[in-house]
Amino acid sequence: MAYVAVRGGSEAIEASLEHLQYERIKHGEHVTVQKLLGTMRGFLDQIMSESSLYSEQLAALAMKQSEGNQEEAVFLLRAHRSTLPRLYYSTITDPRDMFVLRRISSSFKDIPGGQLLGASHDYLHRLLDFSLMTETKEDVQLKIDQFNAIEKPDKSDLQLEKLPKVMDYLRDEQLIRTFALNDEEPSDVTKKALSFPTNRSQRLQTLTRGQTGTVTSLGYAGLRGYGASHPNVGEVRVGMQPIHVEIDGEDEQYYIGSIKLTEVESFIPVNVDDEQQQVLEFDIGYGACFGQNETKAIAMSIVDHALETGGNTPIHDEEFVLLHVDIIESTGFISHLKMPHYVTFQSNLEQMRTIKKEGKR
Image (cartoon, rainbow, N blue to C red):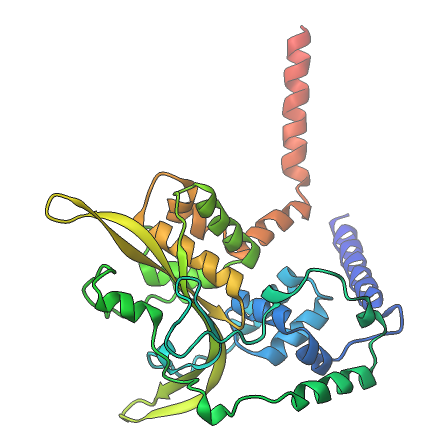
């Protein structure tokens, strides 16, 4: 009997997988990885951030295989990432070296280097563009030609690298608290499981890998009053961050490429004691993630500050936050409820029946 049950189960699973494949292609259409790379920039950025694997091509492949199911795409990339050898560690990189594509500050109107709006959905009217339903290749090419025909400033006149940080000016005025340099080797949460209490490097890694919606919700909770934190966004940077590695036995650093990165520094006003009086200073909340992922990075900066300062609300509880933001952990635990629980349920059922029978005596 056991053999028949196992055999029947495996055949049913094979049939389910074949049906899944059919559902993906049953309309006779398919989307190429190249087309996803060219059209789904925001989706791919989120997948890369949550899987902590920077590969646009693999993210597009995972997106195609998962039929646009984000949690499944992240699961596929995390699983693939676990099979890859770690050949090198990158050197410390400074976002001041970023080739900036977008840089804004909601704290200052005029910032050195200027506000660079770049490409963003922030300035759109949220109205459906029905013309996209019938968009053709000719329409696309026309829009490309029109954009290229717009007179643009000479890039040589623009300072897009080595732009100063807005934070540096507040630090020069001693409006931001200073701390001793912490140059300890960061912990790697992908190689060693979290243990509490955590350090800041573990918290930042976990948040940048966290599910975008969950991190955003926790940041929103902080804004609404769970911590009464209302930061000002000092700077949002989106750009290409150069990455270098060192080879053992050599002093020289080697450039291996650039990744698109979003970095946020938020200014959070706090009262501090100074010579027996309360003075107002700014704390910094930090967020950074792969791709152009601004909402998540801003929310991450709020949660980072909450975890760093501590408090009595859920978003100040590092165990609550860090164990619930991970998309693989959370969806895996929820999804496991679909798996057979026959024995445990029957045990509960028998226990309930016994209690009811005894109650009728």
